[in-house]
Length: 214
Image 1 (tube, rainbow, N blue to C red):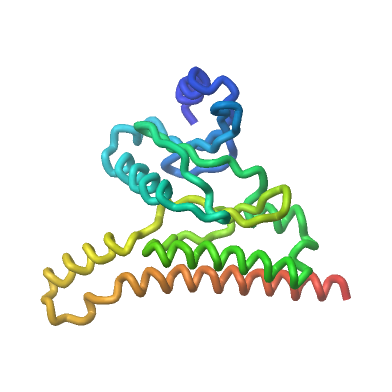
Image 2: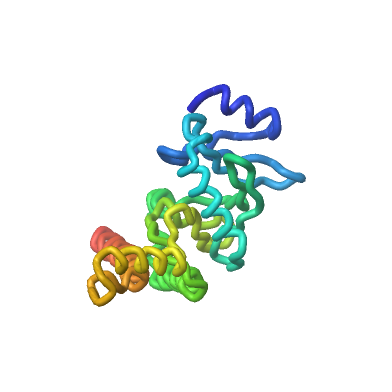
């Protein structure tokens, strides 16, 4: 990360802490605002003037800001090249399994986790949003209470976006071509498939733990 970028953040948020998460497009920080910790996601310096990435960040914030669910991170505010969400004191699912290898040996704990995750994914679908990136790194588990918090709507799709894509594709290939239909259904099934994979992986973890404990 560009150190000048971090210095810039610290001018506004003196207690800013660079987090070991993020990706090719953004750096992530823990910052304090009005006495509370928040999570900041900021575009990397070389992308801050690229309209494609600026627009994608804007879309993520606009989608997330109108949502309210106990198992979805709350979007708070947005700047020109960054957004703020609530800060979750916990670990992502991948790290949680490594650091708490016995937790999902309990069927009750596994069922509770899957129930909460299914609840928030269902909430998104009810609001005509598909997440499309249900991977362990995007599923947080709180340190207190072990509650699920789904994060990162950067890859999400709305029904409107799918409908616009369908309209363009049908116009290009002909209105009677049924192969151009169903993008929304396909997108929704991707969430379902990713959820099933997570469920399968947890079941595999339980079986492995049972064999080791035998």
